Length: 194
Image 1: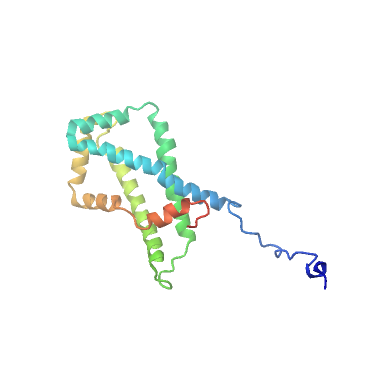
Image 2: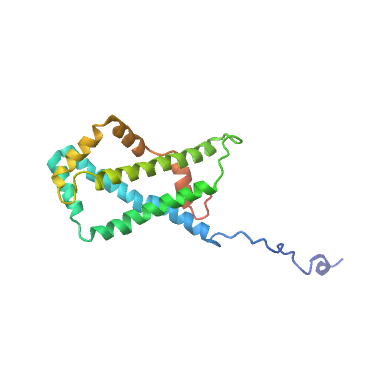
């Protein structure tokens, strides 16, 4: 038997209707990467800025009011908020809920730590979303308008946090979420593998 006879003339092909798996061959890959990035870059930057600005409250009501006045006086504030805060947060939240809806919780069948972290991350994401909606409505759309009366900002936050239920919701809403390092950062790797 010669070498030519041992090599098949036709390579076997993939059955019709079955697409080969290629990274980036569909929009899901891109959307999941955008979801990860929108949770880290604009949302993470906004969160850090928020912590930085709120730290001025430790210097007293006047320092906090000056920081609120600085932020509310930024030129093109509406467009900055829309493009760099609300669109990324909305995309991250809505696509996160879509991922949760499409996924299946299997902690009952496979009670491993990774499955529990996946489920806990989804639930805490929903809690965080509820917190962001509540906080936005409370600080931006109820009571004193802070854009025109920044001196009332410290008192508004102080009044809100004097309610033990709201304080507890703030603590829960701002608590670190489980599964971040494995799920979020893991999805940033080019192929999602170690």
